Image (cartoon, chains in turn brown, green):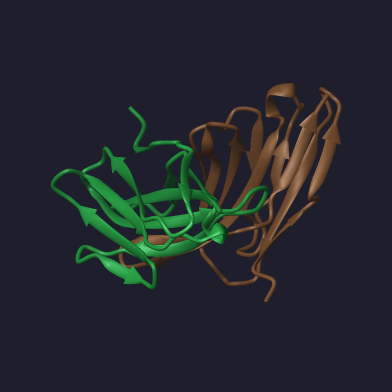
Length: 114
Length: 110
């Protein structure tokens, strides 16, 4: 069972470079989201999607774009990397349970911007 | 005020101890609650859901207090392997995306 697959696991970028973090899920979940995790800050929501073709901003969307052309894929694009974007990025997919959602996470991408 | 607040700890306890964490939430419309566990440098994973009537899974007990807007996690007979960060998750009614607390760090020592 693949679950949620994120690539790459590690990445080093130079300031100003762009890149795309890939996220794919094979559980047919409607909801997908991207979080960043920084020391002492917990998981902060960047962007999310409630279905193919629908995306919305989370708590910290600046500097990132997303798209959701299929149910399975939810890539996160860094437009022009900055050192402040050095972080661990988690993609999650979730489904509805009893009025809420249960989330399944990818293994994370450790990004360093120099 | 953050929507979901947790004491970051760390809680440093000996093996065999009982330890409890609380998590407060600000949105009174919140409808579902979970505890996730995150090991060092790993992704968060669901530990247990928190039901209105409370629920127990082995050494772990989760409870909800709607009047005071907090949830709790009790761990009995702590094991070294319980060392991790415990994340509180809250879903407001109609929200599809979980809101996470910052997590509480637990260190169980011999």
